[in-house]
Length: 355
Image 1 (cartoon, one colour):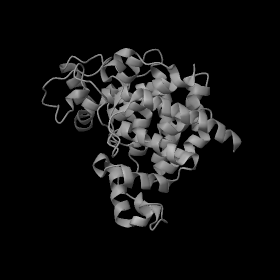
Image 2 (cartoon, helix red, strand yellow):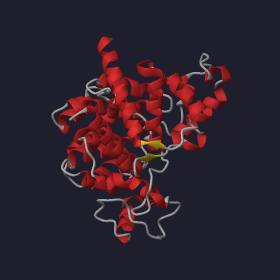
Image 3 (cartoon, one colour):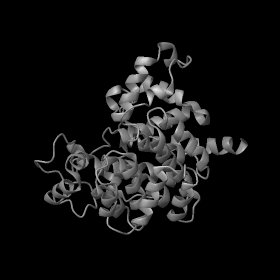
Image 4 (spheres, one colour):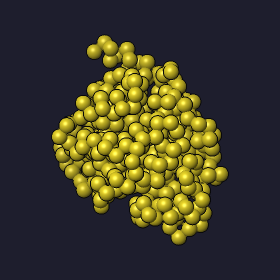
């Protein structure tokens, strides 16, 4: 399987998984798995093996109908896609020397604050308050990072959805991928959320060079703190592979639906449990609940890396049209994103081999 096939499928899988989870994200968060299943059943979307059917429903409020079956013509704006493109742009600009300050300046210069949520918005607002204009354009830091990432949401999932690209760009180099993920994640998150982010980046780097998904999942654990709750979350997921997702809900109880740990467990559980069918894997990921667009995106991307192809039933509806919230970027073409990503894979392969 060549690099281009893997990268294309990773983009396709991540975007498709995101779009599958997007219409029901708020139902999942407000109503839990019971409300989510009620809507999916009422709309005739179960078993969930394609995009969600739209219907007027008391549980469905503020949904983007253009992410539903038969109503889609492009990949709508979503932070799971925006941050993926932003990471690509940062790596094109800064390369392997990317720093936390580079991430901060990129946010200030290119990411509208309205496109950020929870931990990212909290950190963004503190950046604006505590940094000066000289910092924005490369000047020295005028604040402590601990002031920026000290917030009530810094153990949530936000950083975990920003870092897949680092692993995509560095196949076979999980330590470097995890390090880049930490540099990014530290701007807004701490501790277990940072380790969860490093884990996903390392896993992305390991999949292309591993003989099985199980091998990659286990090897990625060597790249994070063994005493972290992120490490434990992966072990919890492994314990319940091929068992009901209700076990994960029983284990994590009333944890926030956007926490990093329960959602990391869902990702690994689905990635290992449904190895024969992309449809089933992302469908059951969304049915598990919690942060559905985020987990669907991550699982979709992981499977794309592993399989090197995504069924056309998922990719045809959005026609290779990718939209983000990044300032001045506009609509992007999938083929161009794949080409840019593959170019960096080749570039970093040579650079990291020389280090």
